Amino acid sequence: MWIMAKILSRFKWVSIAAIVLVNPLITDAQSTVDEQDGSDPVSMKSRFVADAEAYLFVGEARHYAMRFGYEYGIQNGRHLFGMSLPFVHTIYNADFGGYENTTGVGDLKMRYMFAPFLQTSKAGLQRVSAYAEVTAPTGEYRQGRGAGTWLFKPGMVFTVRSDPYVSFYPEIKFQLSGGAGNSLGGADGAPDANNPDKDGKIQNLSLALPVVVLVKDWDGWFSLNAMYIRSLTEKVDFIFLRTDFGRMIGDNTSAALNISKFIAGQPRLNVLVQARFQFFLR
Image (cartoon, rainbow, N blue to C red; front, side, top):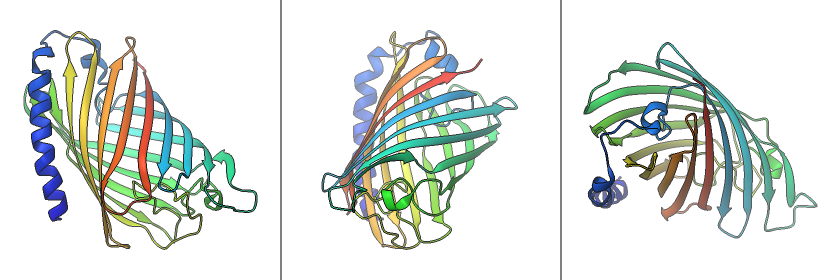
């Protein structure tokens, strides 16, 4: 855990510097980004989501995905139901008997989120979001398109606002598998494209500390996120740093670019790049 303390200490100063630099760009005027919460990583609003993802593994293996999902929020932001399904193309860096380059359906992901605490104020704790996520093994793990087992991910996110345009979203989550799986890529259950065999049960503890800053006159935002993952089965620590840039591109549409980079540990995943589009439903 000392590694996490060290990275969070550095991240704290990075966050403070980022807020100071962006503060002159922050405004009190109402904008589209406020109305639709495109910057909120735990938004409870109904929407369609489309993600284009590129996983770049150590050893030049590649894992590309187009993920399509729908999120349905009810009871004024108290409950959210979601489902997403990826279409995956995997490129191996070894000879797997003709299966080196494959395309097909990945693992189906289902999610329920509940906000037991919710308030609206200028500063302080805004919301507590508890969620349960289940991933079904619909993708072929031998071809790198899935974990090959059921995955269960309970977690909790706290929304804390320091001022109207700077928010923190500290998160804690666990990831457990129903059996042995191919999911030791080093970040959030990504299949290991270097080795398509099952490696044992998955038990991960993850901590994250995102800070999101909204930007004046641009209807946009940027964020920094220090992510710590502890593999309880491998007894290995992974640390990633994620940077997000996004903006509203219409009254009900947002676009964002997210880049996660390996910082410390022994992951097989080096870089994750994600382009996300959200279409909010009024």
